[in-house]
Length: 153
Image (cartoon, rainbow, N blue to C red; front, top):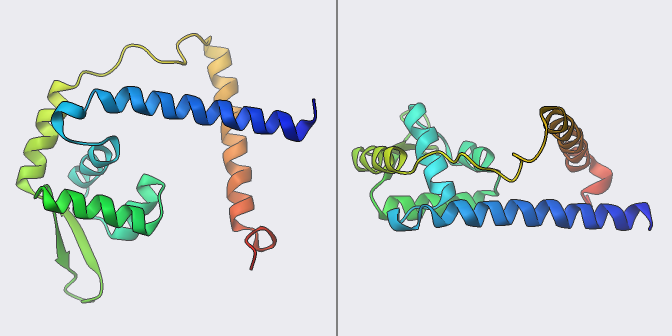
């Protein structure tokens, strides 16, 4: 089997594992009317005074339009709110509301941390090796993204 074909299969397996794990975890949040990304954002806003939409997109590993949808959905629920920056009216700060803090507290205290994982079949050495290899691939992906020759520019 060619190296390129192996990478395609490997990518598919990693994507499948990620999606299945995400779906499994999302099902645990359905009764709270919150998504994994919304919960992650509320947790991050609860730790910080505020975040900008760009910082939110970076934190959630998504593009700005996707982050905007997540922000708008949380605003509709009154879990977060926007505040214009005093120094730059074009800049908006995103803050968690009191209602958002209450919801987050409720979800975090009710949804118990998992004691199982698809990775619990790995030895500690295998886990370290997998982490090392994925980090190496992540670094390469960042190089590819930052490379002008691969950005069709």
